Length: 277
Image (cartoon, rainbow, N blue to C red; front, side, top):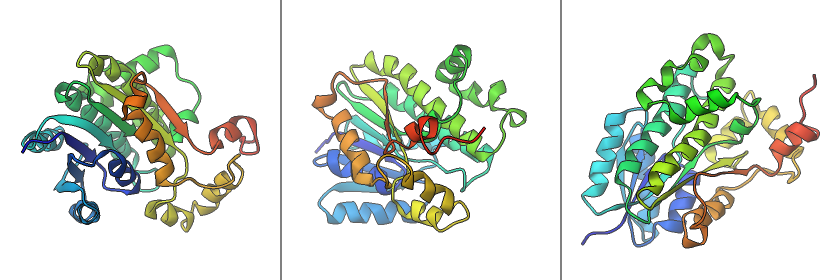
């Protein structure tokens, strides 16, 4: 029996929290670069009554993305996209961050947009980091939004000489995610579908706990201690917003980015987290 299909990339806590809200009654294809991650999280989902198939997917590979789409189409129409794949500034070098978080997300939005079912919807997980860097020029924003995917990494602003460190690369990638969602929402709209992004702050996950106990731990702890919420967030709080965006209650929302960071970005610009000049 054919089912509506959910494509979910990045087998982590945030993606799972979202999939549990919107994936019931659907075929869920969960793809991760790490086979064990995909299989273990699929087991959790299946043991809870969902219908989840794990596969190996590297979103920096267009071929892998097309493979995932093809597998999904064997079960039915592609109705939803949950993109929670990515690497952090502490995990990867500049080249990998740009290849996965920037290029990979752009290709995923493009390819899924070609096959998304009428009435379909997607959400991609960006980051508060995209809101922290200084504003780009309108011309730079348009380049990030509309440059053909295979030419993105050749943009002058993304060359090593113009990127200070892995955090700067991550900020650029996440800014690109937001702009790319805006541009892709126009194309998705032609098919009667919607796409939005969510930019979480510090969310408690196994990865975040590693970061708290790592060399940048004090930085992260200071960030959530001095934000208005006074704490980190949870994956379910991100899923609360994703559920709205992916339901009929969010039918008038597309091409938008939602910052969910407990006010950390506000504090960064106008509060105790403001950098000293």
